Length: 486
Image 1 (cartoon, rainbow, N blue to C red):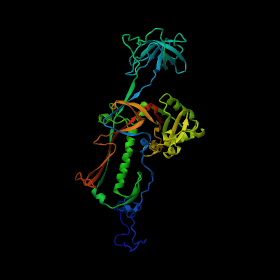
Image 2: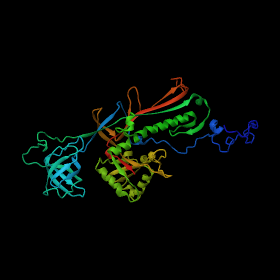
Image 3: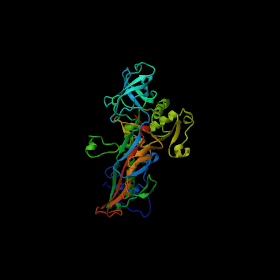
Image 4: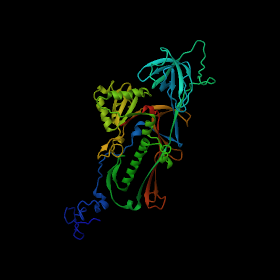
């Protein structure tokens, strides 16, 4: 304990509140001025009557409440199926120049271009030919399928590049009185039916837990601090102040876990240790969506943004989209839009916010329109906060910027086939599934154990506040999402 000055015996209590040298205790005296390990700080917390909110609102959650929903499930895994493209096309084909086109095949994918199909062949330089398929085989992975074509305006395909050729079907042509055998040259005994296909995805929930513990003795110690918490409550608290912050931090973890979540890869240390992980937002977009690396929004960068729109045109072309950006990228978008009158193309309809610009602004969104798309832009605190992705030590005595600058998320819902329900359902593109049943709801559980604070479950002289949730994120239609990275 630090030495108290003046010494005991020389302190004379005053009968009234007077500032005298005989009733003053110098708690930072003793062995040296400025000693931080002082009696007052340890036992008289009422000296610090009001807590200073130096970081403002510190919570990070709320992102998923803006863009998605939460729905219960009863299984260890959620499985959904997404439609594939309606039309038949192949990229990165090889052209031998003599009317043979080799299609690279993936595992589980067969060549479904049949004889008599009419196709368009386009190389990377823009040269193209239209042709009719005269021979086709199913092909194998690693070898590919070879399609023989007959160009309509040339003797062969030598006018096209040898690699990087795109081929897509636009129709067919048959002779009078012919049938539609639809068989391949390599499989004349069978038929190759052009059936609709789908791609199946799945994710698994993880269990997230936390605990706050305070001993019975500490609950009896009188020490009050006036506080104002992020959830809107305020007043004088002491040991429950830490409990409320533990709860707020846990609620943030519920969102951060499904944003940052990563599945354990085969052979990884996590899998060896029996941790399965879960696919979060960033991982899903990197795996199945669009990654815009090195994007630099700013003055004169409208052309780069238009490249993103062209890519969206090749995907689902969802009209309304939300941009959640870090500070640097958000300012870059402001600079980019500064030279566009009224945000471009007559402003934004704000359909996502019941056509109310005021509602959008109250939620922190500003809108602009480009082409046939509406965009609602807002800062994402998670990408700016110094305790998360806002400040990364660059190893040179300063701070760099996180590798993720922002994310574009489509608004609205998607139609998917639910394997459990056995029917098509409409779901938000981004939503959380949590474990629940008639007996146990694991969306957000909280309970007390111990023998303090109203709990009488054990002989432990402490109060334990337990938190638990089991959840995962479903990113449906990830091909419509864009991740902005360095």
